[in-house]
Length: 615
Ligand code: PEP
Ligand code: MG
Image (cartoon, rainbow, N blue to C red; front, side, top):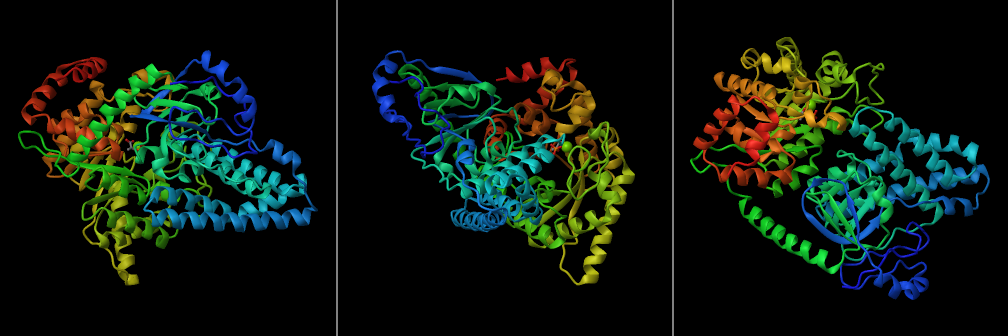
């Protein structure tokens, strides 16, 4: 195949819509500078060379497509914009807010009709950011200074984005992108810029990727995602994860080596990216894709089969979700219900506490979609490092050990009661469970449980339907809870082990610190002992123990955990087939032998290596 060097056209020149074509052999030029590029193309083809970039593979799979750069530079448009009087500009901005909200609403409906729930959900959050009355006030204020409606819109949303960016929690920092995205969408409307036309499959790439770029594209058009930033909880990555779109993050300056329309290959497992690959490289990856398709077809055959070992030991494989829409994708991977609904997502992107009624709708939708399987809803895990505008938390030295999660809920009846009532009411429509995060002692659990009883009393008094038999359990994600598991097990209905935090608290290793990530190992013997103790304590009291931390999606861990007596593993849905395959190819007897050996070992890295090399 004839490949070429990067076109001389300015990759981010925004005037002409960019085309991204199917990965055929013929390479399309970016329309701008097309004639110039044609003259040079023969010489370029001769000296063609692949650009290789390496990032961190976060969602496995090989993707082939044309690069679509997210993040359009509006500077030249802003310079050429002819502003009217301040009053005229205010009117233009107000009209733009209405028009953009309408356009979003149309797209939300379109996506809902097509069953593309994640996309619809994200655009819904964006619509709320457009309609937020605080933002129109902020735009008017900025207009007094700049005199230009599009500039004022960009400034207002930028200021709000910076508020998000200053937060310590990676997830909330990621929401800054949404804010900028919305601002840009409105500014583009004011500047008369049309969205690019997409032809064929694309690999969306950007230092930061605006969620609307992904949310605005049909899933079958997105082959892969490349993120310059290292965030694994960016909205773009979250959508990619629920849709199993191969993704590489953390490529940094590598983004600069790509231009719109460049043919590219991405390997979401190794983190390798090839820009303008040659024939030989294409052939290598074609082979990989063939194997990937075979594996996908094989995984599809597992969808309705139980996660059962060859000698009959079964475990429930459930999904972690952040919104009811995620359950649809999870069901597609054969999930049996939801083991963790991170309800704090329901509280985000809003200017005020969501009302009981609004929460009820969200929880009910999730419960119903679980089709009779259990839906475990975790009460909000916010505060400290995850501040919300409507929850006052003083600056803390150490937010991970601060005022957060159940500690806030127990002090804020005004937040806790509506949430509990909403979950209890949702329980009427299927099987719901309530789970408290960050519990460290029996008293916290009993106090929280008392709130559940009070919530039931209030609902009865108000004459609202609710489920009496909702299970009430806790996350075991602190060493205190794991140590006290034999006692806590007497009170709770279930445990769900949150290894993301349990590992960081047990080993004193920040879960987000790349410099010490070599120490962050769920097979560390200290962690394994706490997990084993937790599971055995639950079983001894006739309760069930599950796991909803990332460890649950590790097929090798699944073997050990089953041998310890775990009953449920909850994970991001695309991991389900891999874990199920491992379980179905194992025997419980062998798993117990392996567990016995592992519990004798002293070093976490050796345990990991031993399990990786197991046949
Ligand atoms: C965990 O700590 O393992 C967990 C699932 O909770 P989160 O990742 O939301 O802290
Ligand atoms: Mg946690």
